[in-house]
Length: 445
Ligand code: ATP
Image (cartoon, rainbow, N blue to C red):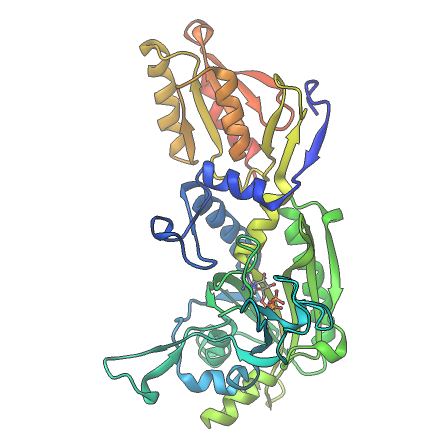
């Protein structure tokens, strides 16, 4: 910690973060000029950098290993896929309406014996009824039942139906996994809490195919790997915990499930699920399609449907957790020293370094813009010459930039710059010629 930091507080409310996200270009409301649209959000210039960095962190952790390969399946799939997967019949939430204020709730999110949580009326809630969460649309110019398709509610099924394509083309032996990042859509009854629960979101999923009977060992392996991945992104492990799904609440496809929970300002909630999906999905597709999806073990000549251990993490939800986790207010109430800082892990930070000429003078700007161009070959950097240096540091703190590089009049004499580190606020004088090497050392991950 730097000597100027006296006190540090965590994010207190989601609204504080929502306002920073809008003010600084992380996340905007979708279609804002039209008054917005329910629970849809757009990632601004900094948000998309952060999201891409997060996806890259996940993709690297999954595919830079011999036993996992990638896939990018389409969002629209044959409607029978969702029949076989069980989604047409069982992918629903219990919905209740308030007869007085017309508000809708998920029955499992409220106490049905109490008055309506919105208007307070007693005995106004209807009996729960099942509401299917899949979005429907039409494919082609004719709008009838035969042209109806779904927007996928999870990315996993694209992997299951491609299981044999991938296995045979890549000559993979069990155990092996297939990883995918992509959009999923759910017509959630009660979306909310910013990007925590939305109707359109991105999932990062990996299905790991194993021999029946070995799933528990691989489940344990992935549980550990996934926990460590969150920690490797800088998430504080004391803000994470495991939650095991009770047996009577397991999803229709699972025989074991653990979630990673994060402590958001509104309470603990899920960011990732690890599920043992048995052979439920492959069996369903094999039965309904009439095509064999069995794996042939070349060594023993055994044929079987593999079991699946799945890791399924929401990209948007994890990004939200990481933003909540990184958010700190320091020296609150002390006007001169108060600052908001996003303490992102440097690999996730949208901007890696900011180049700040001390003053708007051509001789300083010449050196600064040359350095900016040079660093931009490797990193997303910012160049800022407006306002006082203190204000510019605060601006970069608030978007989580790990390093600020100041070019001052001494630079013209000694060919050195001042590099300020975000969290400790300590400053070092580094030779201009060594800045790239310095950052390369810092960004070794
Ligand atoms: P929940 O109980 O919160 O509805 P779930 O258990 O249905 O979630 P899964 O089907 O296991 O979620 O999906 C895996 C991950 O996808 C979740 O851990 C979450 O990070 C993300 N996710 C699921 N639904 C949404 C949503 N509506 N908005 C944003 N992310 C979501």
